[in-house]
Amino acid sequence: MIREAEKRDKDKLLKLYRMLVPNSKKMYVREEQIETIRHDRNNFLFVYEKDGELMGTLTLNICLEALHGFRPYGVIEYIIVHEEFRGRNIGRKLLQHAEDYCRSIDCHRIMLLSSIKRDRAHQFFEREGFDGLVSRGFKKYL
Image 1: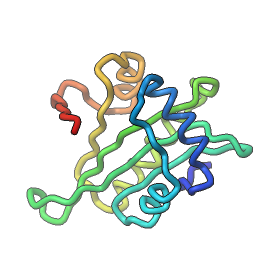
Image 2: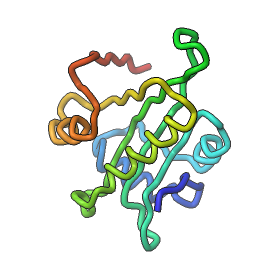
Image 3: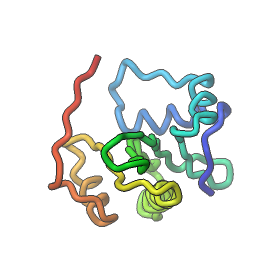
């Protein structure tokens, strides 16, 4: 089942995030921030849960712009499937859930960011219809 994260998911989310960036020393998952996201109409922290286990997560941000009239766009980050549950279409279901939501609010595109070193993830994203050759992403950490 895919649902929005709740503050009770904090420790399980941290475990998933550690699988994505195991050596990060700047990782803090806060219950208050999970609740802030939960109540924000443009930001979503989705989790895939089965039998009380968080098997995956995805962050979706809806961004407003002036270029396409009233049509927003979606940005997906931090898509993670627990190492023990990969290959079970959990990532596909999370992406489809985010895409379905974006279509329901008439987004004109969805973008996602992925570390340049995650070749398997890039192959997965391409199979799901994302084109890694269209744009080039840049980040500046503050």
